[in-house]
Image (cartoon, rainbow, N blue to C red; front, side, top):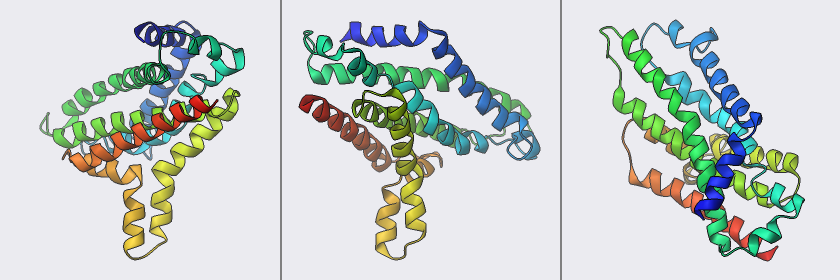
Length: 239
């Protein structure tokens, strides 16, 4: 399992594409947080990193399917999936190794955004005047959103041998899970709208962004991860 995990990491950083994807992610966030007039924290008049947490899920919707689209679909297309299944690893170990490698890449993409925290601390009046609990709660929420999207992207990659189709499916599933349920719930009334809203990832991310780590929100996201990893394993077993 460790060897497959390291293989996935090396495959990503062994090509220019891997560095390019991470660079584009950080550049896009940097422009949204610091440069674009309508979203820049410099135009807010007070120290706040709300744009980082508002727009990162939008970027994740495209970034993570781009990272995960080749994880299984390429193995199927090249015919190496059958060889991988004859290895001593079980199907669950194969799926977990690929998922953990993807999760490491997501966390590596997020770590540089911690520099924004230290930058915004100096912009406060007085310096250090920042809701630190809210920041780290939101940052932890981004990690959890990325973890869920990673499991969704891996599931999409197992559905087809075509990487482009896997990317499109991954984007669609991530969009529905984060934005879709909330959009539908906003058009409903009564208890059904409430339950529908609770199925949305944005609802649980908003709770975490308040700086209070609620076990219900964590259990929901962990449950979503295991659901899609389980679906991936079942689908690959039938294949």
